[in-house]
Amino acid sequence: MKSSAGDRVSAVIVHYRTPTETAASARAVAETAPAVEIVVVDNASGDDVGERLAREVPQARVVAEPANRGYGAACNRGARETERPYLFLLNSDACVRPEAIGALVEALESDAGAAAAGPRLTGPDGALQSSIRLLPTPWRIFCESSGLAFLAGGRAPFSGHAATRQDHSALRAVEALMGAALLVRRTAFEEAGGFDESFFLYAEETDLMARWRDAGWRLLYVPEAEVVHGGGRSGGDRLFGQLHASLVRYVEKHHGRLAARVSAAALDAGAALRYAVAGLTPGRRGRERRERYRAALDRRRAR
Image 1 (cartoon, rainbow, N blue to C red):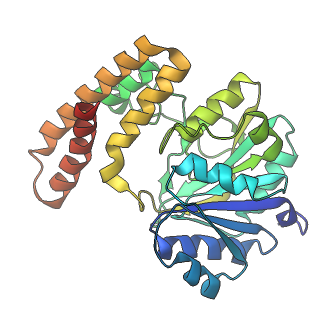
Image 2 (image 1 turned 45 degrees about the vertical axis):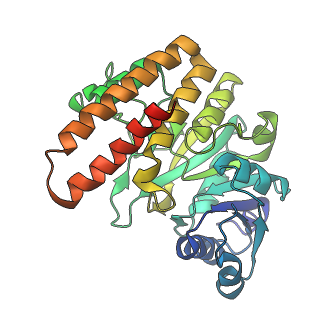
């Protein structure tokens, strides 16, 4: 990484009851990009993350929220606590690899019209995580929930919003990205007003990307930057219903109330079908799938 790149970056890590993962995430930033400012926003976890970071990553600064107001609200708080021109928004279960932050900075500095840049994500086993997304629409949500996107291999016209066939080998402009790790230009973040805090969890980054797109900003995928992403450590399948609720909220905001009702029906039908199929799946895998789709169905009944 260029010697000055880290001086321009503030990493914001949102913490909620994952002290081991949060410490590992902050430590990876400190070790691979020592000049980066590290701010950990504790979403009222009530755990020992402050003491752990003081021992293991003393350069990290912990900012305590009095209540858990959600991921986007915590990112906004972290942004207000910093002044550097780039914000590196990093999930607590994500660890940067060497040179990742530098490659993201270089991409943004080479493209003044890009609001943000995202890395190549891999799982802990080294397998690629498909992180290039499309913005949700009622049709894409239907294709994904019905299984059409899976059966079509993510190919148009049956692509979903997450289940898509995308090239992850080259640097390019994309429609949307998974938000596990994202380097954001502060001017673009502030111009958009930051995250919409009415999204408690999930779809908040998609909403921000849609607003950037409407304002004429680009979004870059940078495969030279690599981040290892665990996935779901602070919520997992228990929050699958929250994902559905956030998607419906996103569609209502960007496509209207009728489109949101259609999307909600598609999501509910898809969850019910998958729950029924999971009942035929034996063992732990079946139990985990039933828990996931039960969360979505319970969320529907609570509406």
